[in-house]
Every structure is written in C-alpha cells, then in structure tokens.
Amino acid sequence: MASALKPIDKTTTANIVLSNMRSSRQRSHIIEVLRETTSHPTAAWLFDRVKERCPNISLGTVYRNLNILKETGIIREIKFGKNTARYDGNVESHHHIVCLECGKLEDVVCAVNPDLIHGVETAKAYKISGYQMEFKGICPDCRELSHKTVIF
Image 1 (cartoon, rainbow, N blue to C red):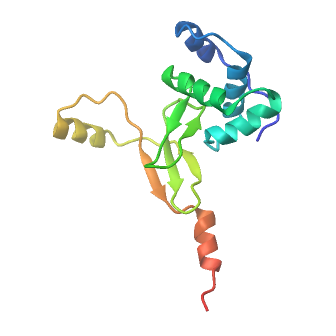
Image 2: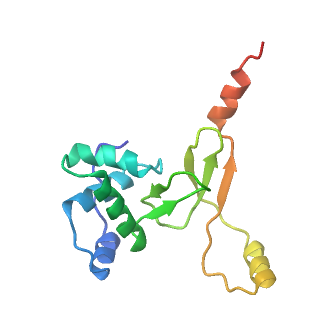
Image 3: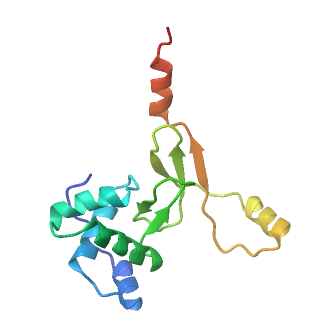
C-alpha cells in the first residue's frame, strides 16, 4: 500500500457538495484509504486501516459511510454471488476478474466488442446505457501452487 496520501479530487468534492453530504474527517479517511489500494478491500479491512488514522472510528461508521459513498457514486461496491462486498475507489469504466481459489480481485481494462452490446440490445430490446463485466477464473499464483502440489 502506498504511504503517500492521495488527495480527494475535485470530482469527489463536487459529488459530496451536490449530494448535500456533509464532509467529515472520517469519511475523508475512508476515501483516502480506499483510493490508496487496488486490492478492492472489504469493509473490515478498511476499518482496520482507517482506525490507524482515526482511532475513535467504529465499524458501523465505516459501513454507513461506505453506503453513502456508494449511493452518491463516489465509490463502487462489488459483489460476486454471496461473497462479502468489496469496495473500489476507482469509478472509471473498467471490469473485474476474481480468482475462484483465493478470492483475489483485480481490475481489467479492456474494450468490449460493440457487436456484443448491439446483440444484447437487439435480443432484449433494451437501449444499453452502461455495463460491467465480471470475469472468473484461477489466478497465476493459485495455478502455480496447484502445479507444485504433489499427490502421494
């Protein structure tokens, strides 16, 4: 994790103002910690890191703020099936891939074939306004571990 704090950008500040959300030191710390990592952490992980900067924060406060930040579009919540929610400070257009063995979650930046979007629009009579793809598989580390496992 990077040690330097990333400042809250103008877009985030504008979203806070437009949503009538009161700015708070605790909320700022949550955003900063989330934007310092690309690991797509859980609320519990965020709580542990934010508590280092803001010792009086509670887990409930972290959950409430994550919900507010998600609802205002400042962060993104990621859920794969029944797994624990993970959070992403990057709300730019991108997709995700999750390892089915260890749960590692990574960003995937790639173009989507326009024929796919057109095909969905044609098949379902929707006008597509956005999309997010979720890929699942086994990461290189887990594949490497499975090749090293010796069966007797």
